[in-house]
Amino acid sequence: MGRLTTHVLDAAHGCPGSAIKVELYRVEEAGLQLLAHAVTNSDGRCDAPLLEGEAYRSGVYQLQFAAGDYYRARGLPSPSPAFLDVVVLRFGIDAQQEHYHVPLLLSPYSYSTYRGS
Image (cartoon, rainbow, N blue to C red):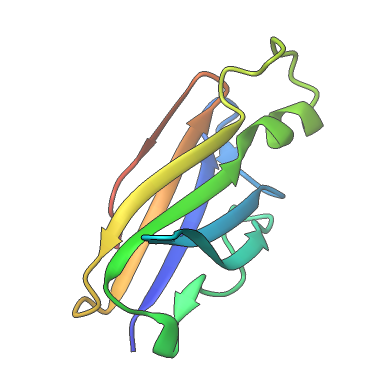
């Protein structure tokens, strides 16, 4: 069975992005369907896959990361509103693939992602 995982690296501080709220949605014609929510651990990872088993199927998904809350909790001064508050990554899954890993490299003013392994 396939699974979807993620992790966050704080590029501004050179450390894992811990205690970041993450939400996973399936993009449907009627809108977004919340499938899972988690908070990253001290290694910047979610403790369990966000999607697996029968729920793991082909489709369009959206990960949302509470980046603004994370940097505010770190005491980083930021403008109001923050340049990056919620980082949204929309991507497709082909359920024939066994594992999708979608990392986020984050700073207060930029981010990048890729399909990891």
